[in-house]
Image (cartoon, rainbow, N blue to C red; front, side, top):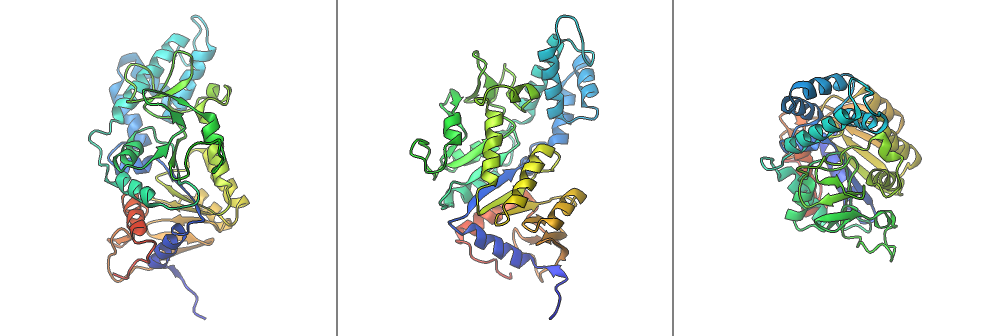
Length: 371
């Protein structure tokens, strides 16, 4: 028997399409900053650079000092700890509580400005919305994202896709923990299974704190108030009404639902807490599948995990780890739209993945041709 030394792009795409066409599947998408970058918005590093450019004077100096060895979310968390714990004229990291709070507001304002979707290319998100619109599963499609922007909401609404994000209302929408936590099909849940679930794990540019200290979703990005983005340590100590903790619980329960397929795109695996949630679920749920699309080189940590956890598939541009086996792709004779372009697998690019999903659902899961 001949031993295969390469992976076939066509076979992988066909098998994935068949799995996604199975109505009994519970399907989740996990979207990171790379997906937003495909639409023209900055990724994490780009966002940090944009914020640096918008700050001035002492604010820029303090931000740069805090950013050393941290990412922008960790900076916000640090500022909120200082604002919550320091009193009077005492300082931490050369900041008083008042100065930390003011810098927090300035950073959030810069983030909101940087993530303006006005000039963005919505096509990739529209393709994802088209796929979600045609999804016909017994369980609702769940989209988890660590992005703060409004790309997904805009695309879903533009496509007429009904979705639920945990909030009820319009101008000052309140978070409903009971609806988020209600099991699918629960008569008391009220949210129909045909509604796509959109869970923003790290907050959003249109989340703000209300006068009664609750997080609400407004009808537009925050202007004068700091956006409620990234769950600082203090937030985790509050009640379960706070969205961040509830949504992380929702992710954990979704990942542990039997027969789940999780598509991960644009996520850099730099968040250890979320990494462990994904890896733990893969170990415990052997019949579920976790398909990670890696736009850059496959990291050693991800390769090691996939090597000993066969239901984690890592899809790179030149190679893949399938069933625990790492091999190069076998190049087709010709380019295949959304699949094989310029000698590389195209699916790790969110633009091509979203287009592939839209095309696959339109074809009812038909196999990719050998074009």
